[in-house]
Image (cartoon, rainbow, N blue to C red):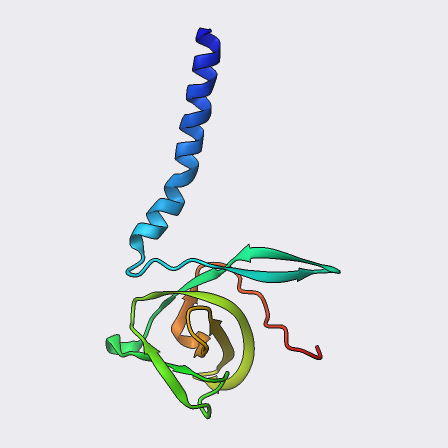
Length: 131
């Protein structure tokens, strides 16, 4: 009986420790963001968590959210410097400070320049119909 209780306690402790990075990340977000997106894997589609990135702009300026991946697209909103956003996918667009990469945001329909977003992990490429 003691051995079973000891093993259960050890398993519970490891499970609790496994949650520490996720809880620490969630607590560091000014507005918690979550979500899932579909990732094609051959003939099957799996659901994977969104990548996240922190907005970093000069002098704390707001970053325009564009309707498409480029500065010629109209601004449909803004995001604040320092905010953490869920990133659905990346694509190429107009060049901003030598960087042509743009991220599609999950919480609204729009794109932000990757020059001003530091992604925490790899962001998948966007897939468009016909590709």
